[in-house]
Length: 169
Image 1 (cartoon, helix red, strand yellow):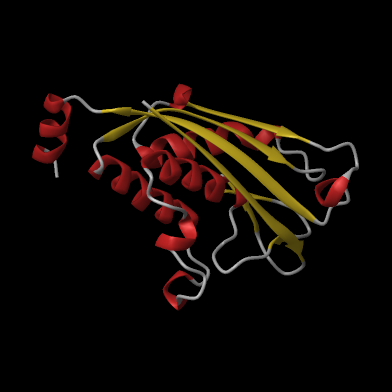
Image 2 (tube, rainbow, N blue to C red):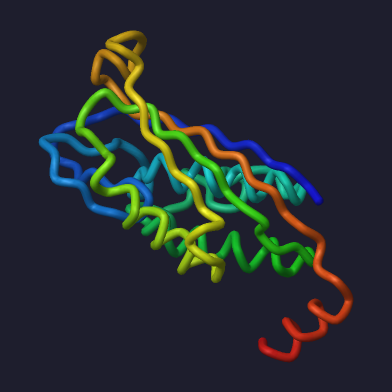
């Protein structure tokens, strides 16, 4: 088993869509970034890559590469899932926390969990997402940005599972 941790933060800005966990959320601001700036998926990807010792998303999808300009982070997550499977690992579980003063995210969490699970080919119960405010403290509390933490547990596939995955490619 291997454990990974990821963290990401993006500034809120006018004229951008707010996409968190692959879910578009109605709000007057969105997250600023080279890609779609999905702060939750970026933290999840960093946790998964870190658990495999594959560095971080900036290494795999650099913001200096125009190919990732306005990229859909769900597609990037799909690629990260492929990379960890190639290393012989499966996702045991993902646990994430979004730090956000506004908007309230609770109604959107089931959609986020489903999107992440579907993209990684795992069960919805293997993805847990929480959202919290910071009681008006710090940059997230002041409404300047949104942050996310994620941890994951990866399990090494058995030789028979590795063979089955190779057969299904």
